[in-house]
Length: 505
Image (cartoon, rainbow, N blue to C red; front, side, top):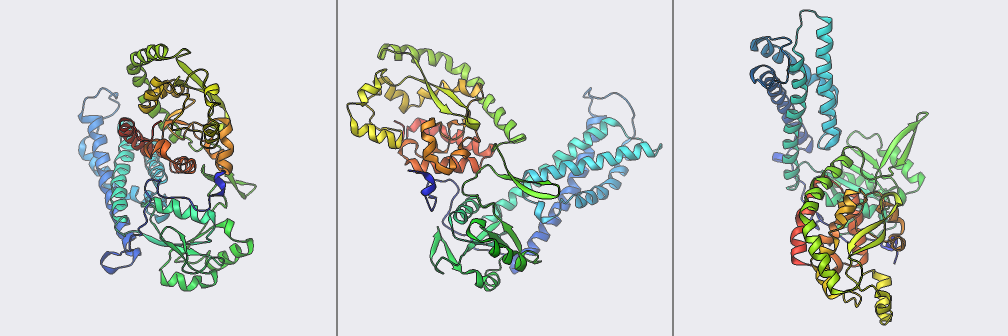
């Protein structure tokens, strides 16, 4: 039952997928290039206003409000800083432009854009510091400089965040979309289409596939068809106004890729993209690193790095610590009831797979009889079902109290201790035993790149009512699409899922 045998991923259980392709629109019949020019003009106006407000806020924080944060190192009147701000705003806009903050490839990309804002504002402040050293009459309060840097980053970044959300909203109506074709129609190409279609804010509108082995007009994935073969690309690009060409490397030979690169790689009105060749298998992402000027692709060992890892850790502890305090009395009551219901320990330790393949004991409240194996041996059919699906709807080993605890998900409360020990996370893939790893096939390694979770997409999407393949797909979808907002959304949707008890047994 290896997952790698699935040729076409199902979209029914994955959030954010849609069978509808929005029609591509342009503002007042003008080209998409005009839309991007309007966006850049809007960004320039935003940056001018926000930089001015940031300098004003820095002055008020440093001189007007008595916050007790700064020493009285220097004081200059408001007119001095106002004149300075009027001079600095166009200079900073120039720095922003040089830093690539108005380059289309750097826009609407989230962390990349914000990191460029941070770097550009840092360059602007550093330039002022250098000038104050070189020109003795040019005096600035150090507190103002510090507040100007912080305020500029927050104000400009905040303004761009709002603009980005506006663009994301109107993209769902067909604006700011670039038509794209995927060359290839194999498993990797389908996974690429599924990923791009699930993110309506990506800015790409997949027109279809091009492949020499598929029949033109045949369905490949969802509403997407094979538009034709590779020899017809020129006509298809003109017909569908294609701006992005995505090559599924595993579907093409080296000569095919080289031929397409020679033809379209340097085209001025078309961007050529190459997939990793393992996109449908590797969910952790890749980095390009140069050795002796040789670009080599490196697979990331962990899905979460840097700030993402810190945000997830903060979210876990922000929820886990208060939850632990609140649930201790409840755990005591449950422990007494479990003891009275059936002989055996209150807690059960289950050996499961953790991040990077490290095994650990996941804590649960015992919900089965201690002689569960002997009980199950009396039901050969159920033994076989358990070996295949790792779950039984009517499990004879479960105690009467245990059945209620599972229905209410109370048996998983002790896993809070695993979260505090950083073995698990509040949100993540399902915890699985070492024996289950073989059922994930080629995707097994991806499962170990993030910590398993108490809840996850599988729990809010049907839990045990899902097939094993659907549960695997949801785990892979979560790993590939992780964001702190997805974790918060899952936590919010877990509450009604637990209350309703959907799929819990």
